[in-house]
Length: 394
Image (cartoon, rainbow, N blue to C red; front, top):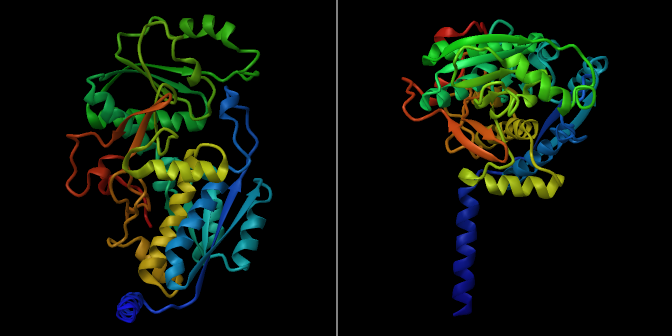
């Protein structure tokens, strides 16, 4: 009887082995290049960037790829590099010369374009940080994919929720920096797209100073109500503050008792430490065990970029760079990323379709796209720039 059991077990193993594709030892080499530009300190010390920002997400993504790839003889190597704007090109050139075909970038929009042009046809580049719509439009590149959601996607996600709540009259406050103005433009476009009205607009000028001390709560408590008073009647304040200068001071300091959204209050983002739906808890716990901190947007976005490579490697095998690139952009590609549905890249601008979380403090208040907002192809395409609107010439 024992012999029969052993024979039966052996038969099962042989059947499973036959079902698996033939092993072909292949190494996939990716690099995460983070370009750290000097800037002002955030308003809150809780927002100071950890040293391993993005790199911890890379470690988890590489481990997840190895788990599935190991059965097929695939190995995954990821090098993480912290550069400055002065050293970024040199570091990328080194990575390309060493044979890294997949580059994940954490850099601002101008640097992302610069490095994508340098990579050319030698690498597939993933933008895991910059949300600028220009990167998906006039400044798009054929070798550049975007796992970070765009300003248009973030603005549309918030706009859908505000319209669903019937908070359709907006008081838009934008910062004085170019990136703030670009984000404000995305909110103007979203308001027009979904039928909201911007009844008041103001610009908050950045005059410098140490915002955590010189402009602390005592002064802000007196200044912000004065700045926001005498606005036309509105349902909600929408802040466009990509530079992080003023928005965190808006809640509980506006002249009128109104909710705040956008860059503070109810915030659209790709990830949040409180997100637990659709299996996200297991991602959160694994990441926290690895990094000893919660995951941030940059960590999650780097993880998605590496998992996209791993998913394509599993489906194509063989390690051919062109096959990986073509599959990622094909209709057959989909990525499971703890957001309730499969994600895919838009072929017209290289943007990853994805739901957007709407967070409020310690909770995820909602997830967009909202029910009732329809699209002829994918409901996810209600977020961001659609094919017919795109300025991208890939």
